[in-house]
Length: 500
Image 1: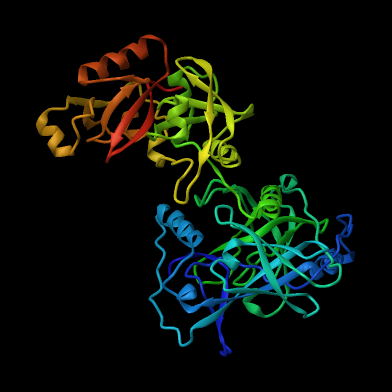
Image 2: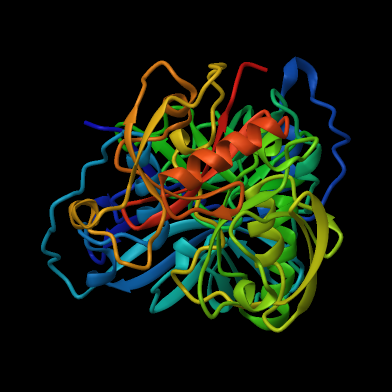
């Protein structure tokens, strides 16, 4: 069986004793019980390395979340948006993921199981959005076994965070937020939740990686852990040696539906800001710019005269968007938003997504060898819109160290246009051949690509392309930046002239 990434949401048919996974992909929804007051464990383990003091303090604040859903919402042939995004990520890596066949459900309703944790004495609870998505009603089971109805305060599908509230009639113990930015690879962590509905469970492990981008949205910055998490763990807390929440356990990568030591958690430093907005407004309107962006590699930097890598290279600007109205152009490199540095395309996505629609913000842009300032009025990011569309690895300008580009060019004749199905509005030169041992091939240039601009200068034929490349070489540039159209999409490719 091929590996699958699962959001852990365990579903059981009403009246049935067997618990079955509701989601096709393995995502971990943390179901834990009840309330726990913040405590200071001081990060000191008991004799023999026991985590008992941390568990004793935190476990009462972890709850089990049970939702009632229509069977159409939990049938095996349906997937949540997060499921599909994670599936797409692994398929993009060449890892096929099987889709389960539809199953008939014998009843009209089913139960789904997840986890969460209490952050305030009056009963505010944090969990994953996919734990409560499409729920008809939500119930919370505390650590002492009490079961209470929950009200949905707010949810944000893009970050997969949701906030609930219960009325317990008494102050509840809570668990405090920690600082995920302080986490280092190898740091010990605990995951608390209700895997498979068997009851609150604690597992231990270490931080395996930081900043995992699974291409599921603008907030992808997952903590990877090896602490076992399974169905039912999603939404539960990931805690550090001080007993504070440093993440929300959200997903696993699994070949068999169970834990294999590759889990993912939303960092607390990201989650706290989102939770605060949800508590206040019930939802989050994410900002939208309307650009496709790429990383700024060394070859790209060399081609445009930047002395260092960093920023987000604008590959395309959608018409009638905030970016177009602000004057952003393909070839621009965005280096900051509102004074905050943009080091990667993900930085730009997150900074813009954090802005409220209608906000007017300044962008620092590298264009024509100098920095200019543009003012943009951020738009609303409707469902399905992406802040950034990263290009394929071969289009990221990997240096080959060869002294020439190694491409053959031809003009766009009517016959060539017909073969490539190119509209008349596209001008440039078609790549007729690529030498496999030259830098263009290493950078990802392919036969059939159409070069439409060189170093931000539009070209109309093969002669223009050759002249622009020669001019860049004479100017002492180490690379040349080509704007290439392929299959209806435009992307920048930086091709080095020679070895660095």
